[in-house]
Amino acid sequence: MNPKVYIESSVISYLTARSSRDVVVAGRQAVTHDWWSNHRQRFDLFVSVLVEDEIAKGDPVAASLRTERISGLESLKITDDAVMLAEHLLSNGAVPVGSEEDALHIGVAAAQGMDYLLTWNFRHINNAERKSHIVRLVESFGFQCPLLCSPEELGGVSYD
Image (cartoon, rainbow, N blue to C red):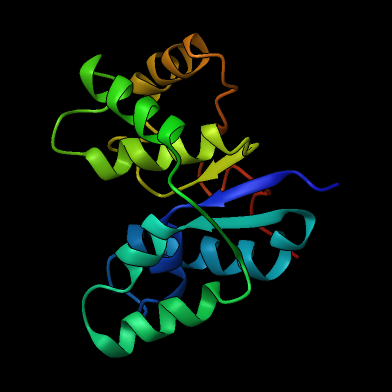
């Protein structure tokens, strides 16, 4: 059985967006394309109904492209445990109030037993100052916290 990866919305957005002139964004896009092409086969990939809702917003053509990229991936439901975890993360300051969707991504991934949560969200999810607090709170509820990481951290970049 392969490790399970929850793909958060930002990864799909970087995967399908037009090439950016911003060097940081362009770099993340390149890493995301590389990960999707060369590394995802080692993992079982999952999204959630929350991801589906988020990527369906905005420009209809772009939304269609994002939705197409996740077709065939298993979509996880938002369980009561996921909601409880998200509320716990918010009420204890691990994820700031106003970022309910970010807390819910973590809750879904943890409640569904994911090994990794793949994201480009360094503000509220894959944040060095928040990670240990997130892990402690998730584990205080008896769940294993998925490793919060970017595509660059999960498989790296192929330089061949």
